[in-house]
Image (cartoon, rainbow, N blue to C red; front, side):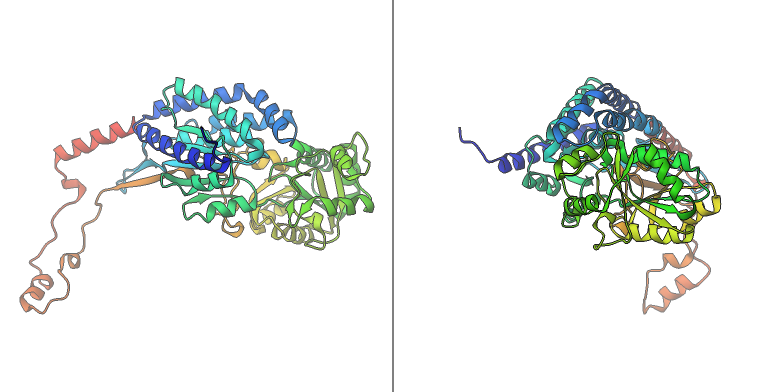
Length: 502
């Protein structure tokens, strides 16, 4: 039997999975809310139970990050996510306005193609699967080639749990023959209705170029401003821990500190005590030369510890170093380390006063992080609100981790591994993508006011008799207000709506 090239096998797999997903989603369209929730609860529990194993598997396969931290992300994307979306109605009538006599009816998108990154592979797979199925969609995971095995194992675990709870076979799946051509075939397939893309800028641009609805994210060059009113000890502890978290592979990780000058020296000393190693100019030049390929983070340096970076690039750092801090002067191409690094290297700036800090943060955001996220450490509510009102980003988290705050672990925002960057960042929404984004709403609307007299006119006419007919007072619009609806029709409508709510 002839062996086919991997790209041909990948294309065929994409077509097969899309067809199976469409058939399964058609069956699932008739599921009740109780059935949907039972299936999702089973999948969330199975994913949470496997959080540790899958976290280790992701680290071993990709070489990125910290297994214990990936476990926390897996729990965020299964247990915490399910708690957040469990009670959201997604089947039938989900909202009604008795005054305006309108009914909102949830309707799934259909088949979702979900592109997942190598940096957060298992957690992103869990999260996208749960929000898709909760909204009665089918979903096909298209993993990054570096993370194909751990994504496939995540889907296998969730699919077995879901199918035991009554989910149609084929509703969720994962590509195992991964290639660029296969992923493109999946995105373009006629049965795919929506693309949910999380990953690098090039991948997101490819998703948006297909000509189908797509949710994507932009890069996150996240500044952390520390005001003179901040609890500086807490800020130091949080910034170092957040930057070190999973070796900085979450797109909302702090990429630079902007320290208010009166507290800068104290913040520096306290961060050193937490494991921040401030590098010299020689190491700074080595990092600037090696952390990027063009304008993008170097994949070889992504998700590495300070010690791994030192070994790779021929310099030394202390064993206690959790992150490397580089003092910078400017923002832009002349200062490469002012960009998003996706590894354990943090920029450092000082600014005198929150207004100057504000300007520096905007420079950083405009240099590769428009629309994404910002962290502020302050106790002055005026400063906090000014940052909230003025920054061109859609997640501003206060006195918390950038990594865990933006993704909904330590704040009240929706748990999510896909963080929209809005129109300013090239995305359709600035929200944390969740179940609400994966269904459309049908409107059922009754007449609440009678059409005006002129609406019954046939239009322009040369017949004088016709003109008199529609300008005289003898013609009346038919009485069709809801108050005069036939009692039998009202009873039918009531029964249908009750059935839709089940």
